[in-house]
Amino acid sequence: MHYADGAFWRPLFETNMELLQVQVGCPYERCRFCNMYGDGCLASPREEVEADIRELASSGARPTRIFLAGADAMALPQGDLEWTLHRIRELLPSVESMGCFAGVRSVAAKSDEELGELARLGMSLVSIGAETGYDPALAFMGKGFSAADVVEQCSRLDQAGITYALFYVAGMAGRGRCVDAAKATVATFSQVNPQIVMLQTLTPLEGTPLWDDVRDGAFEPAPELEVLREVREFVATYPKRTFLMGQHSTNVLRLQGKLPDQAAEMLPHLDRAIDGLDERDLERFRASLKSV
Image (cartoon, rainbow, N blue to C red; front, side, top):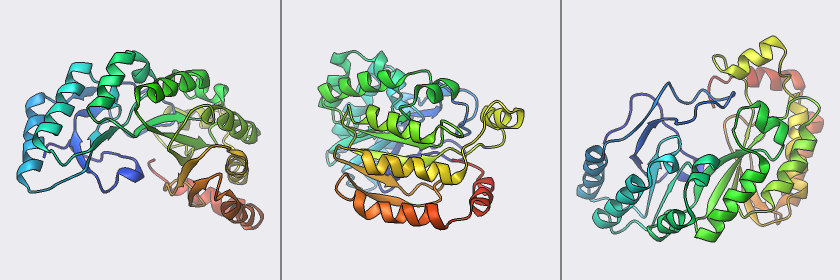
C-alpha cells in the first residue's frame, strides 16, 4: 500500500476501516491551531490508487467500508473522486460505503449534481471540521467559513443523501467566551443532522500560529475548567439526536453517548470533574500534548 511517510489521521469511528490514500497533505493549511500536515498537498496518482485497491482485493480482505485518507479528499477533482469510488466498487464488491475528511469549502465547491453522484456511488458519513458555531472563533482561527456556511453546506449534504459527522473543538473561543461558544454551537449544529459530534479540546501546539498568538498575547486560552463548562453546556442543551464521541486524546474527560437521550448520564461526570479537578493539574496535562 502507498502511504506517505509519517503519520496520517482518521476519525476515531473509522479506526477499524481499511485505508486508501488518495491525497497527501492538506489543500488549505491555514487553520491557526493545526500541526497535522506539512507543506504542500498532492493528489495520489491514479496508478497508485489503482494498485492499492487491487492489493486490498488480492489480500482476501472483504471490507465493508473504505476511508479515503487525506486531509480533505472532498477537495479532489470530481472526476478523480468518481473514478476512485467506481474502482472501489468494481474491485471490492463487499464495500458498502466510503468516507473521508470533507472541508466546508470543499463541499461548497461541488454542485448539487456532483454531491448526488458521490452519494449514489457510496460516499457517506464524511467527517467535517466545523469546529464551533461561534463566528468570532472561526474567523480568528482562520477557518475560512462561518457558522451559516456550515448550516448551508451540511443542508446540501442532507439533500444529496450524504451523511456526516462534525468535529467540535471546545475552548476555541478563548477565555471568558466558552459558554457563549457552546450556545452558538448548539444553535448551529442543531439546524443540521450530524450523525456524530466528535469532541476535542483546543490545544496550542509549538510550531503553530496559535502558539505564537498565545505567546504574543493575541489569544488567551480558556482555563481548563471553563472548557469543561462549555462541554457541559453543550451536553445539557443539545436537542437533536446524535452521538457524542468525546474520547479524543486532547480531552481531559472522555465522554461518549447518545444525545439528548444519555445527557443525564454524562452530566454528573462533568459536574464531578468541574467541582473536583485541579486547574493546575489540567494545565500540566495540556502542556504535555504535542499533537492533535
